[in-house]
Image 1 (cartoon, rainbow, N blue to C red):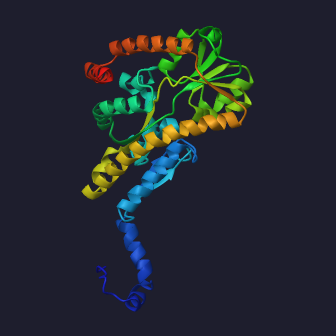
Image 2: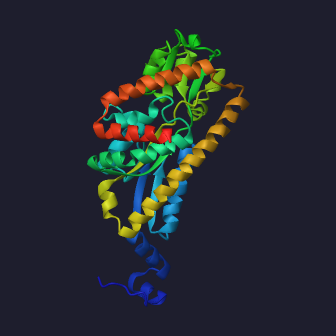
Image 3: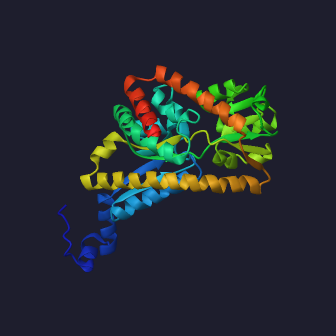
Amino acid sequence: MQVIKKSFTTTALKAVFGVTALSCSLAVTNVSATTWMMASGYADDNYMTVNLREMIDDIAKASDGKFQISLHSNGTLVALDGIRRAVQTGQVQMGEIRLGTFGNEDPMYILDGIPFLANGYDRAWQLMTLQKDYFDKLADRQGMKVIAYQPWPAQGFYSRTPLETVEDFDGKTMRIYSKYTQQMGDMLGSRTVTLPFSEIPQAFATGMIDTLFTSPQIGIDIQAWDNTKHYVVVGALNTKNAIVVNKKAFQKLSEAEQNVLLEAGERASKRGWQLSEQAFKDQLKVLESNGMEVSEASPEIIARLEEIGETLTEQWRKEAKPEAVEVLDLYLQQQKQ
């Protein structure tokens, strides 16, 4: 078939192919456009998903509509735990992963999960910038490329009864989600248990757990006010997610498309930090509006958590690779300046 020139009139196109110039134009656009699929495990109203949609719109606009990404949120296409594998294998070209899930592979994934090491958004951003090169190398070996990061809000404890002293944690059963939160719970005197996100409400309702350490966002997602009355803000850490793309798919993009994607990713990271900080404030208000008592942790609890953080930092140092320890040392050095 000969190539159709733009000079063809609508009448001529109808005569030859039985289509209008408009439909032909659409067909050509669809053929030349880059279309990707992205998987996310979070709900549509989660600020992280909102940020993803803004990034996708940003990419479409910057590429004049030639680079389109279809977002499948809330685990509808790929379950959260399977997203990294789906990106690696090319099942989807793009996805969002929670870095702390992979701490058993490399301690760097859970460095930001140490209580009070990089708490607060400014310190969390500082640590993230120092970790970038290390994460880039890890992702490259795994067939991926990181284009953006999103932080989780500060953490706290959900409970039925007030948590005012360290002794209030004794004998409680605490649901945790990572190696360091487990050790933190153990060192506070609690019994720790790991449960899937979907099982938390039932675990509270049946008395299987007494406390939950997580962000206000998760508490809202599970309607924690149905089973708890108190949320104690400790602000101990701001862990983060990474937005990753399949390495081969990235390499197939034109240079212009690669630049559009990377620049949109940089803007998404900055926006993600801002959205997370605002979301934290808004989410505390949501908890209060549903009858929960929100309070700051007592100085006694904060002091104990800081001690635990120092212990876990030294433990991390012994387990990490020398090049990872260099990142930690550089971060600690910057904190002293």
